[in-house]
Image (cartoon, rainbow, N blue to C red; front, side, top):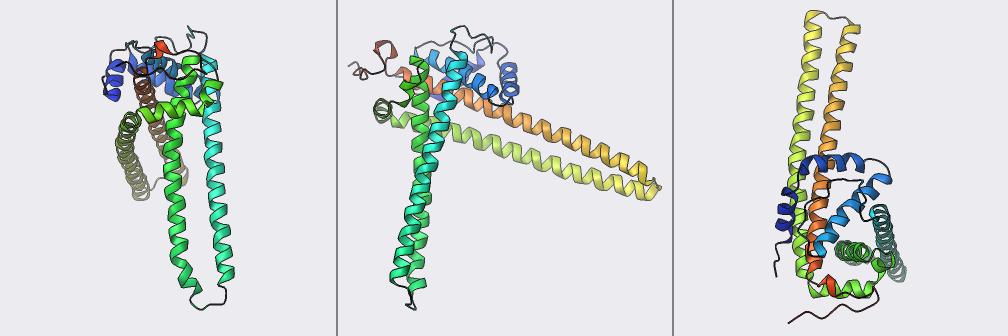
Length: 291
């Protein structure tokens, strides 16, 4: 069984005609509120579903083609699953924080008046805060795995209910959690590299903007340019800085969509190991691995 999910996804992307232009167009579409993320998710999850079925096809040529008739429904279901997961994490963290705050208040009341009470409870409070933070990190990764598998099941069955079958989702996760961790690691590594490069670009843009601004002001003072002329130069400088900033933001979105495409396609390859062709209805158990 081939396990290089991320590299296979990259090769499949590279085989696509005009793949970079398509990614750039997806990035533009993603900027449209609500409709954009629905289209992008529907498009990329359709490509991931093809991989789950064992297809080694390139990116679909038309973003709005909707050849299977499920593009918008699939994207909308993905949006609902993401919102439900975010709500679950928020409620869980709120409950944990409330329980910790209640426990701390009870213990403080019990030992109120003791001279050492503040020092005594400093360490439990710090430990409790760290515990909540650690639980939040673990829950975030766990929820992410559930979201991924939920999206794949939803894409394959084309029903929203299949994305909320927690028992089935957990069975898939526990069979190959290492594969999901590999995909997560590759995604995080790609995000860190992109983030580092964009941070350097931002620094260079801001630094050059400061240099240009100081130079304009210095030249204006030296040559006696009027206040009106100086204002015009400042406006031009601000406009150029704004264009640079928008360009960097757009590049960030392009990189984000690129990583999303690779992650979803990788999940498709990961799902293929469960022999999707042998799946029954969404309520049937997963088929046993072939020996």
